[in-house]
Length: 152
Image (cartoon, rainbow, N blue to C red; front, side, top):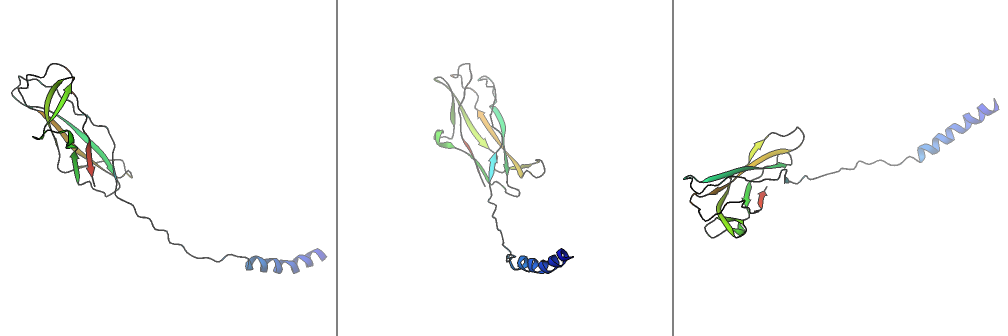
């Protein structure tokens, strides 16, 4: 009985000190700004076969695929033209041999479907065209690496 009386007298004191030591409360607002950004999600290679005797130009196409933050829309896809000739063409090389081409790109991105919750997805079509009659190009594989940029 004595123990019960002691605890009943002590309980309000302990409770009072616990309440007195409680922290003050305030609300904190947390703000974040999501910046527009896109990333190219697949390597791109344009491949085609060329025959000088064919009266039609040879053309190869590919897609540059990209993913952006949800609702971000790219507005520009363009080639790095610092390696190009004054006429807007570019030479593919095989040793000292050259095959002249012209590169092109879609003006606007095409929306594509991606997995839910993975942002907005787009593609740009890119093309390489070689004029017929380039008889000086010997047999073999020709190549050049050209950077492609996306603006958003």
